[in-house]
Amino acid sequence: MSINGHYRQTEINKVIKIIKSIQENTLQTSDEIQLGKDLYDLEKEIKSMFLRTQNDIQNMKKLEQVRTEFLGNVSHELRTPIFTIQGYLETLFDGAINDENVNRTFLHKAIQHTHNLNNLLNDLIDISMIESGQMKMSFRYFKVYDFLETIVSEFKPVAFKKNLEFNLIPFDHSLQIFGDKQRLKQVMTNLATNAIKYTETGKIEIGLVEENKWGKLFIKDTGIGIAAKDIDRIFERFYRADKDRSRELGGTGLGLAIVKHIIEAHDSRIEVFSEQSKGSEFSFRLKK
Image (tube, rainbow, N blue to C red; front, side, top):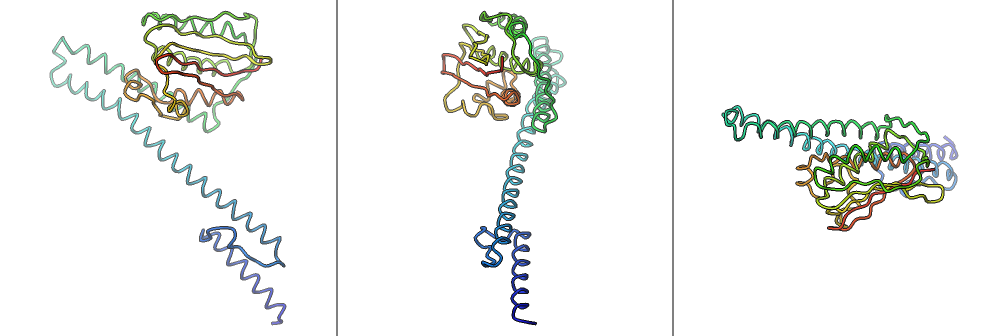
């Protein structure tokens, strides 16, 4: 074999060795890939391939970690209402069914936990559809005053039971905004539910402020507020600032994560302003 041929074979063997190292994931950095000045373009391309491979591996590890954490959270969240229902029913079967002082109370609590379980399953379906891209959006213009008026009429009786005011702040009745009306109702329902849950005295207000080409929808309350350390995390799946209180009130830990996804699908973002013991305001902007 000629010197030139030997040189070429050596370079080919070097390329094969490097590619094999990449396949076996034994290289630590792209700096370990060295082919010499005669193969600079090939070296550059292999380094690029190596970096893409490393990035894919890191993403896969992150996805696996997220998946593991999600499954763990789901298992925990499902187990809580199931065990609670089981406990109430076993107590009833052990004799409490004949005790008129507790039987109806236990049955009522068991039924309430079945509602919580159903809400959790529905939210799990929604978040899975959103994150997998299977939830379809239908964007069109609609009258936002009528839309918010419907929300208020649905929630006013719930607020009244807690002696809370639930008011729609007046604005232009003819104003239209662009979005998926059905999914935005899901957003406002989640936000209104939370506002009532975490407000003991005072009022909840809902409305819209015009800002040039945008309409800023808002809902604010005079509730317990959110601690500054929790505000950046409240939109995470299953994150609860007050875990015991949230579960007691029937929260699934997914409502705000769903809100965030839906608003982001509208090319907007949800904003939060809150002070503990003074209340919270959630808002987002949509095109007029």
